[in-house]
Image 1 (spheres, helix red, strand yellow):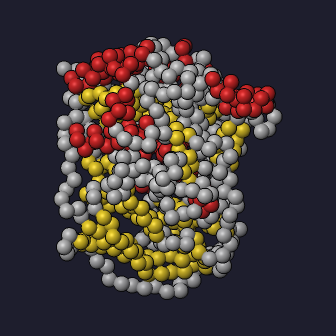
Image 2: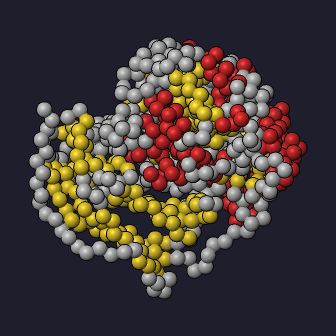
Image 3: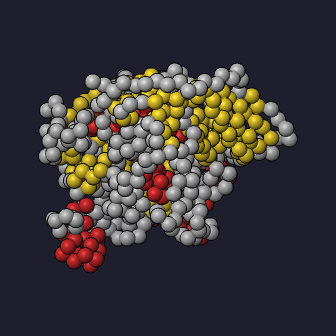
Amino acid sequence: MKKIIILVLVSVLIISGFGAVAFPSDNNLEKNELVTFSNPTFSYQNDCLIFNIENSNSRINNPGYPLLPSLIKTYEFPLGTKINNVDVKFFGTKEYRIEGKVTVASNPITQLNREIIIFNNNKILRKNGYFPENKYIYTTGSGLSNNNHVLFLTIQLHPVQYQFDNNKLIFNENAKIKISYVLPNSPIEFNDEYDMVIITPNSFSKNIEPLITHKNSHNINTFSKTVEDIYEEYDGYDKPEKIKYFIKDAIEMYGVKYVLLIGGLKGQRAGWHVPVRYSHLDDNSEFESSYISDLYYADIYDEYGNFSSWDTNENHVYAEWNQNLKDELDLIPDVHVGRLACRNNFEVKTVVNKIIKYENNAYGKEWFNKIVLVGGDSAPGYEYYEGEEENKKALEYLPDFEGVKLWTSTGSFTGVSDVVKAITKGSGFLFFDGHGNPSTWSTHPPDNNTWITGLSLRDIPKLMNMQKLPVAVVGGCHNAQFNVSMLNILRGILKDGLAYFSLKEPFGDFWIREWVPECWAWHLVRKIGGGVIAIMGYTGLDWFAEGDYDNDSIPDCVQYFSGFANTNFFKNYGVNNYTILGEAYTQTLKDYIIQFPIDWNLSWSEAVESATLLDCKTIEEFVLLGDPSLKIGGYVSN
């Protein structure tokens, strides 16, 4: 028998509402808004109460804590605006005393060395007081809105709190928002001379000239800048910082919207043609202390419009968040950044040729109106087949596309040959969702811990889709970790001896496959005679959700963590009509950081407890290996 809820109305305060208003006073402005929350409803999941509000658009997804509704409000102001104060007053209070338990959020999941790992939040669970402690939080950050530079103010309202001591829910019917701000004395305007800059070493310059000519012919005004010139002309602590200062100048002096980095590792050596920045966020998984984040090059400005160093504690270790140290980041992109991780001129010629032919010839082709969807049961034993559910959501966002479904649950995906055959026929999009490492991607059959490999490095040469090239997304750990090298075997042996190859727990690092000659995602991009035109994937551990803990009939795997990012890219193309690759990708990152705002007031342990670290990590490690100015589906022929 379901638990009986005893609804005890303690107090209801009714105050007449008012509309949004702004009034000037020596350039000081104020915005007021009244938010009224709909009457709450109740449902059950496994005999646990779920509290619902119809006009909420998010939930507080802290593992092990009550899964309570919230409302995200986002405001845009001109770049340079100063937010003096944000104040929210709640009123119209009702208390609901309950019997039994309230539904709690689940623990995120990932996979490493073919073993499922459940996120460890150290079980730091409060047993008294209120959850959440604060009725609202707000964050600010600068970024792009329709290619305009603006300041974003995001307020997360918490109209419901759970009181541990008395097992009560406190609900507020109304929230009065008051925002005090100061506009800049004059609008911040940038020149509009160029659309894109290509940053590359001098040794690649000759082979990118055809791409520059091609882009200019399609009114993407493009120029190049060598890293050698940047290093000579710009000051900075290291080479990545010098490049970032140049990007800032390119935005302000030329109006650049797209930045294409052409250059990865120098063959199998440790040096870089175009260097990377590593994030040093500690996600408490004990498996990786850093990972590549090209978001560093896109996040140019902080909330005040100043240069975003990613090193606010000035110790020259970037994007730190651990028990002792924290760099507070903006994270919202200010320019559309993509990378072609070319290791030599042969790869440069290959990818430049692929981009030119794709944009000139893909438009109107029948093969483009397909999406190949590859998935299975990412976490056997849980309620959903997570990979297939993410595939379904992507297809839902592409109503005009035919879905080629390769799923373990239907028998349409039994191994590599199924994937090779489907990709070779051609498609506009390709979406893998499951598990990976730098050398392979795989998943599970339904409720079965055995593995089915979808594609590995040795299989990629079999793809013969020629110019029928998809834009791809891959959900899986480390598939886009483009710093791998065969020299890592030698480094591993020198560090750990024969334990490097250990098959016993804890497994040796050999099985992470960081010693392969190139990563899975980049091989697909630089593949001759097929592969993909661009791919988005993860440079580190990919965390995802499972189940449907809020009982809304939408699997949590598409609502949180990597599943939200993966599927929202397709939403931004198919629903929101972002047809330029970098713009759809940037919007996806922005959607994530607004939907799951990072509260930098949290300590590291609090960020572990709330899984805020995983939100931060998800957007930092989601990289675009491709041309950010790419016209998805190609240009209309003249």
